[in-house]
Amino acid sequence: MKRFRDLINDVLPHIREIFPWDLDERIKTNPAILLIDITEPGEYNTLHIPDAINVPRGILEAASDWGYEDTLPALAAGREREVVLICRSGNRSALAAYNLQQMGFTNIASLKTGLRGWFDYELPLQDGCGNPVDEDTGDAYFSKGPRADQLGP
Image 1 (cartoon, rainbow, N blue to C red):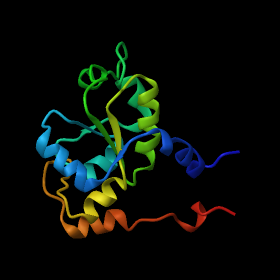
Image 2: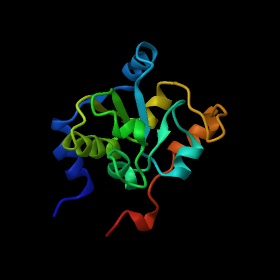
Image 3: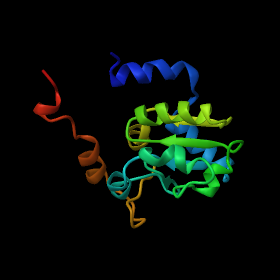
Image 4: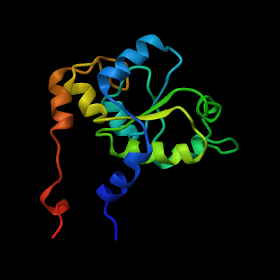
């Protein structure tokens, strides 16, 4: 039986990761970069990278292909386009990057350290209304951890 961390470790050698400071530079030099935030809508509304599009992890593969109710045309047509997947810590986005590579995406990366690393590097975040996220809100969001009942036996 594999655990979540095992699945992530299995895919890491097969995907490209990009650090927050490198992504910040890529955004400045490549305005056509497609930022896909795969967090859940509630997470996205709390904070996300400006110009990132929310495509929750649960519908990502359908959004990435033609012919589905969830198809996102910019993503489905972007198999050659530079795409960066973003999540809270870089774990879900690593798994997602691996899957999209299997679907033919050739220039895809996962944001290493995720939104947490982006925040730690003091890069801008905004909420669902487009307002800047302040340090207190970011600290509260990233300080959450598992509850006692989530730690397991």
